[in-house]
Length: 148
Image 1: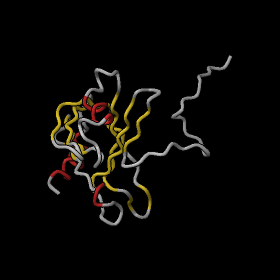
Image 2: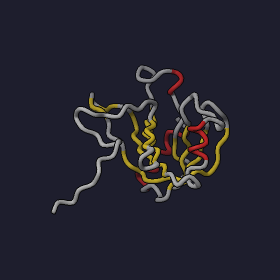
Image 3: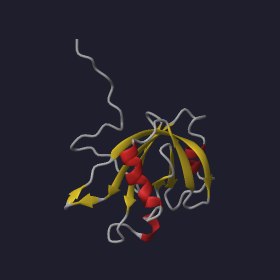
Image 4: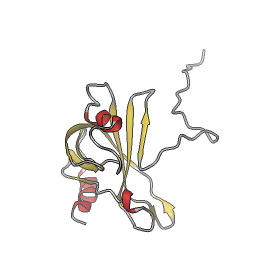
């Protein structure tokens, strides 16, 4: 007998591709926020409201800016701040730039993260603690953007 599972609403097919904007995909069926982060943003590819400042603070801490309309009082903001208590997971996917040599640059999965602190609103500046430290080479690449 074949191992079968019920398809999730988040399953992708050629004909069915969930829409997500501004680098965030929330999957309520599995209680997960997937954050797709592009570190170096070219003005030609992004609007002024999506030129977020995201970068590694250390090999285990990451600074991330939420969508420009998200406040700590919004449902999305509350979900980020209380994800552990809600039984939800935050997963980070990072790439250096949108494209390289005319091809889309792939994201690197850096793993799950936990909320540490935040300041500001619209966008929120959130510090995430990575469950697994970044490899040294990746940290050097991701950390460069903090001063860029």
